[in-house]
Length: 447
Ligand code: PHE
Image (tube, rainbow, N blue to C red; front, side):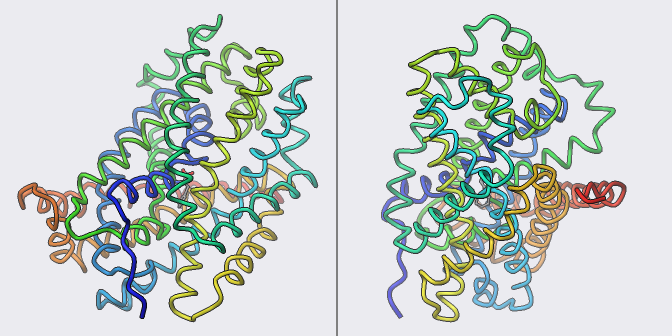
């Protein structure tokens, strides 16, 4: 067997992990979930969820991956707990499910790179979004995005991922910072900051049952948890690296980029609409596209270039995340069944393209796919993983967290205790509320 690779540098791993984490979850989804869940109240709960639940959970996935040094499915065999392979399996399924509609939104982003250059949306951003986000055009661009993802996974992830993210992460930050400052200077953005940054505790108290599960699942989605991605990436980390330090950095950077995206989208929505509008094209899935596109329109000719650049950077962020989703299943089939890498990547890519055509046809389907992922699949998959790490793999996991970190052993002990109590209860409640909300209103497009 060939010598298994490890990341060449610490930065290599961190960048790849951040590349997986930073994506449409931060730039597209976080601002619009904030807008549909009460603004700052959601932001507050999200921040708590990222630190109190996301960070300990990511450490659990790191501990599994680094010790097993294998893909997210076989890792459980290698750790001598073959029955728990089901955790990897559920994660893999969840990741594929998500990729099917993630790619639809990725297709919108490609469409907007072009729309910026040609000035396509300059005649009216809301109507443009309505026209390109559904139907045949959306299906075509969804196909292009999926083909790009499969293509990169088929031809050498390593170089591609490391290099792309090295450029992507700093450019995302610079572009978002620039836009945030620009939005701040515009008339009418003022009230957005109160909405986004000063939580309405009354709203929170009345809507705790929906805000909490959304925020927790958003943290999982955004940190690429519960889908085997972090297990897979951690399988290439060196023994003498500190997992808590790496985890802290990934969570910190990822959260900061999400919050920054909100500082762009929410003020721009206020400038345009005077509030956060309801509906797909306003405060819903269209929020990023409608609000940011409007800002570019206002810039006139220069807006075309800036717009194209912006959406191009978002595209790279989306691709580096999508790749990590498809890589989980590909590395498994290649390792285990010796399948051809190219055929595997394009085979799964093709199947997911077909599944995703539903979401591309109608945003109601996209919403439903997303709801199922958020309310059931993600929390269920993370919960199983937490039970595994907390109770089955416990002492070894503690050992692995201690490896390479010079923090004293009490940190690792505190971590496992926290995982078994706060994290377990938090994820359990999230899953429970998610399942009951779906049960109460399945929200199926055809019902
Ligand atoms: N975290 C990515 C995002 O926020 C999505 C993703 C999830 C990527 C899971 C890989 C694995 O866009």
